[in-house]
Image (cartoon, rainbow, N blue to C red; front, top):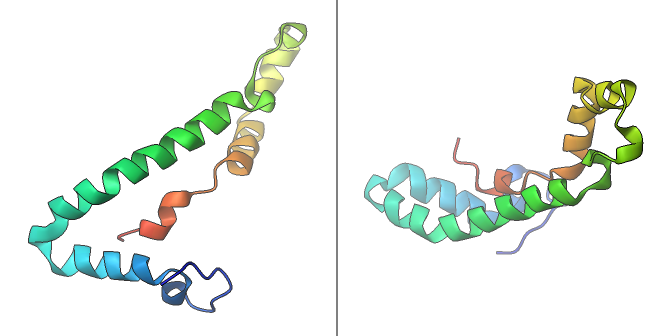
Length: 98
C-alpha cells in the first residue's frame, strides 16, 4: 500500500488513493468523515506549497530591480507561470476524486 511512482497505471501508483476515491464516490454518507480525516493533511500541503513560493527568491522584488523594466519583467505572465510550475508539485493530485 505504498507509493510506487514507477507503476505503469494510475491506480497501482498509490493504491490508497484508489481506495479513497472509491470510498468517496460510493459511500456518500462517509464523505464528511473522509473530509475531516484528509483536511488537516491537505491544509498542511497547501501551506507548505505557499511558503515555498513566498520564500523563492525568483518571486521576490529586490530594490535593484525596482525599475519600470524590472517590474514589467517580473509581471510577465509567461514568466510567472513558469516560476509557478517550477515551484508547485501538485501534491493533492494523489487524492483527486474526479
